[in-house]
Image (cartoon, rainbow, N blue to C red; front, top):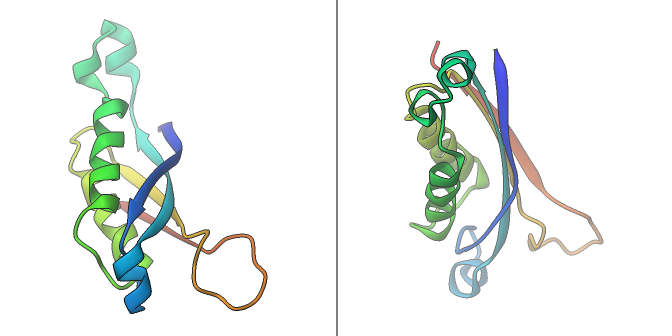
Length: 119
């Protein structure tokens, strides 16, 4: 299986359990790695035989900017579902970063990583 990755997609969302997070919003960063067979696309030099990563990037940003959820776990699942909606994608690994999480001690990042497949 081949891997196609998008790293560092940034979007402002209003996700979180705190009222302040919902009102003010914050930046979320998303990484996705997709498992798919790229041989048909490479063999015919045919975009229709792979995943159009520009379209997928816009879909992911739309999810982050869209309907708020309490948990980054839920956000990651919605993104994985969007990735798997592309028929060529067999596996989707999604990492959602919440670098501005409301934590009272110094930290670098908060992330959730999920891996989903068609099987």
